[in-house]
Image 1: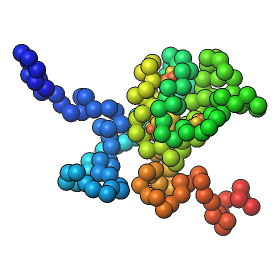
Image 2: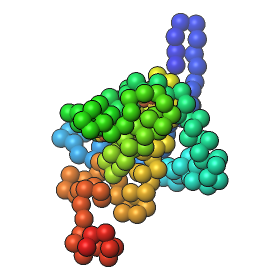
Image 3: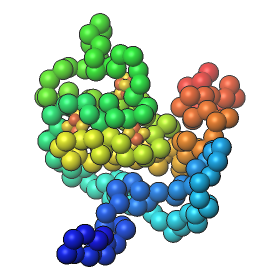
Length: 183
Ligand code: SF4
Ligand code: SF4
Ligand code: SF4
């Protein structure tokens, strides 16, 4: 960075968004014209270090962690409004007949909103980071969606946003699925 009377060199990772630091798809999947050369993708990155740390916590610590994480939430819905997947004409939180979740900033209502929204994004979230960037309270909301993103990769080998021809795992089923729920 150069300006009048100063020059400073920054490390890229000190200024990038959290999700950009761990991105492994910097090249576009589809394009008409590519304005520059393809880049080498990042390798040897653990995209889910933060999720695993939470998974390793004892249950009571996990509860406290999420309580603290969501305690600043003012339920402004900026995270939802910024998300490219949250395009439903009427979001479940705005429904009144039936009312799926209370409208208050009571901790239970706040948790219900976040957990349900995360499940709605399962298999579709590309970790674009728009939700986290929009939050005026600096809440790391991606931690919810990242857990489900990790599960989709580990359980189904699925990453959202890479194929136009395949359906997300929670959007499809096989009639010969070995589990009982399908019968
Ligand atoms: S990171 Fe996922 S949940 Fe957040 S805005 Fe992007 S697609 Fe939506
Ligand atoms: S949280 Fe769920 S219901 Fe609301 S806009 Fe997003 S995907 Fe739709
Ligand atoms: S943007 Fe932040 S404060 Fe607003 S609802 Fe989402 S998590 Fe809560």
